[in-house]
Amino acid sequence: MGLRSVDAPRERPAPTSYLVHAGGREERRTFDALTLVVAVKPGCDGCRDFVEGTHGLGEQVVVVAVSEDGAFEGRDVVVSPELWRDLDIHSAPFYVVVDPTRALVVAEGSVFSPAQVAAEIESRLRW
Image 1 (cartoon, rainbow, N blue to C red):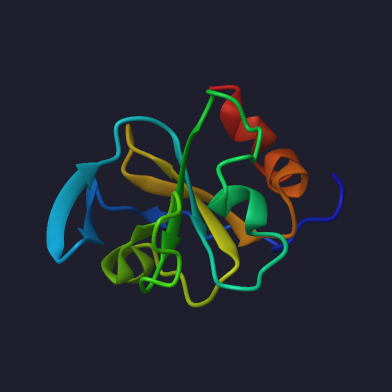
Image 2: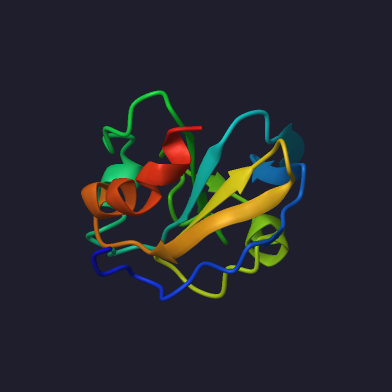
């Protein structure tokens, strides 16, 4: 096995839904499929493709780019500090893979690029 951005992912409970803040309103969304949640921050080169929706990860996994605040207004990024808390994300750039069938975080790590994230979660995409 090659190098990974974390030694061993911490498999732990994941929420079945999350709250998104947009335009002064809140919307509850559910995890309906294997989901890659990418915590992003401004100025992050590794986050750029996730922020712009050009990550190229295909349709095997739903990708949700999430910010703690509205720094990415007008981009394909949801604002949900609650999701950061519920998934135990401490800083960006970071990713978490949620398996909704078991309500578990099944993979996690630092984000350097979409290719690196894809390589690290490849075994999860074969389910």
